[in-house]
Amino acid sequence: LTCYPDIVEEKNGRIKLLRGRLISAVLNSTHSDTLMNAIYQLVRYNIGLFQENDESEAYELFQKVLRIKRIRNYSLLTSSQLEELFISLEKHCAHISYFWVQYGLAVQLNKRFEDANNHFLYAQNIRPNSYQVAHALAKNRMEIGLDSLRKGKASADENFQLGCDSMLSIINNPRYSRAFSYSVHSYAAMLMKYYTVKNQTIPDGKCEELDKFFNLLMEKQIDTNTKEIIIAFYRYCEKNSITQYCKGLDSIWHMTPYVVLDEDDMGDIVELS
Image (cartoon, one colour):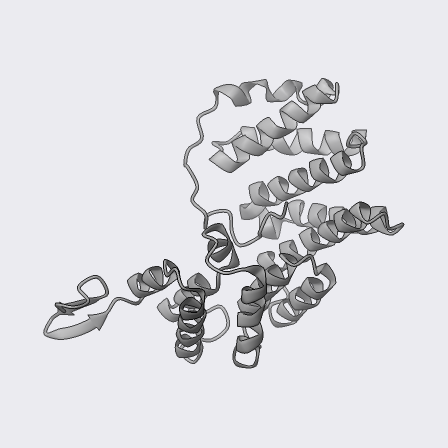
């Protein structure tokens, strides 16, 4: 208690290890080898304490310690170190869909999008109705299209459109309505990226879709990320002289987001440059 007051407490005559604080302390470590070993040991400790998608402290801690977005945002490990970590954990965690989603995001960072697709498919086999998995697969297919475009491959448009179709099916699926703003955010961001690299304007039909989606979002209170993507689209329309698709979005400048989101609120999908 004296040596480790931040992670140990006495309660009702018992000593309790505050595992959430322990993980936060570990994730703030500056030595990568120590950090990798600590993450490995924490995952190994927790993996036998829960089943797929349990609502338990053990599963919550498992997600926190493996969350690629957190590790990447804080520059805790390099992309190669991340992949090394996931390789070492694969035989222990292969039955958990969340592991495969994070593994897929890890290899995405190395631009290995086909490998990422395979990992997401493993996750889908475990949890076929998961929003997170469906979103990861759709966005990754769009990333494959974008990567192909940058490399001058003829398959770019086909792959990107496949990803668009998959993302639209998610956006329009009532099952995933609670994640509507998140799906629209990814769809809009990828459209602007792709057609900017292609040196073309987003096609009229897709602009009309975005205008419709954004107006639906603005009928409710919006969060900070939604406001940012709507403003980005508004400026995109101004820059490309297609302001007919953002006339209904003028009020975005005066809307106050209902919450400022932290790094975890936008889920686990990593935005690549």
